[in-house]
Length: 74
Image (cartoon, rainbow, N blue to C red; front, side, top):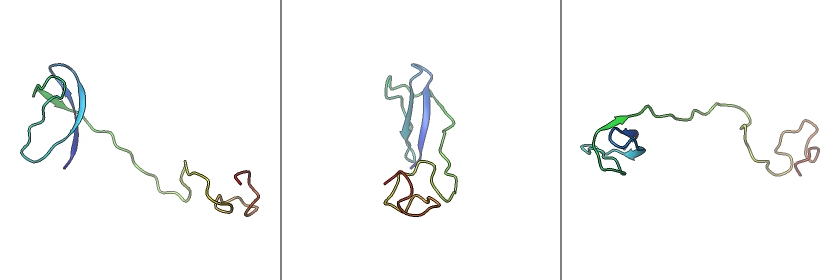
């Protein structure tokens, strides 16, 4: 079941909703059915050796070139 983003043409409320087959979505604010479907924005992950925002793990897992215990993350 896809999630779609809409803007209500009557009250200009922006919302997203789960749309099931055969269901006509309505604005949760004014219950209007004149909706404009929006282009959804989604995240794309980049494949890399080390995540950009990885939390430090146990000693030796940060990848410091001098080996375990050499970094300040202990």
